[in-house]
Length: 390
Image (tube, rainbow, N blue to C red; front, side, top):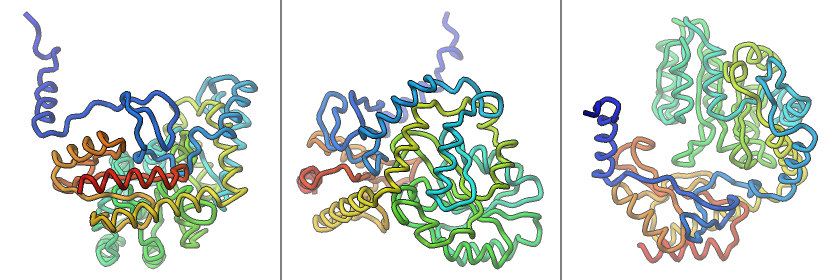
């Protein structure tokens, strides 16, 4: 007789519930590089779901740099950075990133998620308070849970509510850390960063901005949200990813030398997980050089974003209040959102369905992610698919 515990019956029942709700999915599979068009599940489709903002994921210069790094350094770092996994190429990446971000120092992690999991718990402790926007990314939520600090949440981008929280609680804690996304990934709206910084200064708080979707998109040549608002020196911790606009993988914390020194001793992903492989690091350095050379990639990204948004609005779609290339097409019901995504796919367009628990129930949407690599002809074909489904 089979043991029902080892059959994971309780998980099978949960999976059946997902199927009944119409939100069960299989992982999509594509068979080549992540481009503006891909072969997905055996079908050629326009890819409007990738974070590959600048089209760097398959760029010849990044590929050549990755190959050159493998030839010189091998395929792996071989250890955590604090033991014997810290190569000079890792140090070079951090130097180039600090120059690009116009910050004193940068500490590179293995992913953006690792940044939030490792940095938040390292920079606050018992007796401190974290104040977090209610729509912050899941990695921030998990990072906050890992810390020993107390937590408070303010309503999304509501400065009056943030002021209320700080007024009520600031006097009870040693350090207070205000955390916000720079660009909110599900809606594409910007944090009200100048006002957050002003409140932080008024109440003697630290500021922490997760700029995963602002890096490579906003600011001069894609330097990010802090640069966009000209707030250099006023944000204590800026987090960015190296897997979105730069098209590779990794994450970083930008800020002061003090920040870097401390994280090198207490950032747990750095202490307990092998360093980024040389191929990744070599490609990232090349990508940063390209971004510093020219603004053409970010300009093309924004041109494409404006064109797609205008086309969707003309068709009568609700695209929320996005201020960035992230463009949500609001559908509502979870099952209907999933069905809409499948109908798009049948017309040669991949637009990923985003439903609960990623967004609130009843707030399902197709999240479109345009890139610098899309052609006008591809965007026109995508708009034709949306027109057919209106």
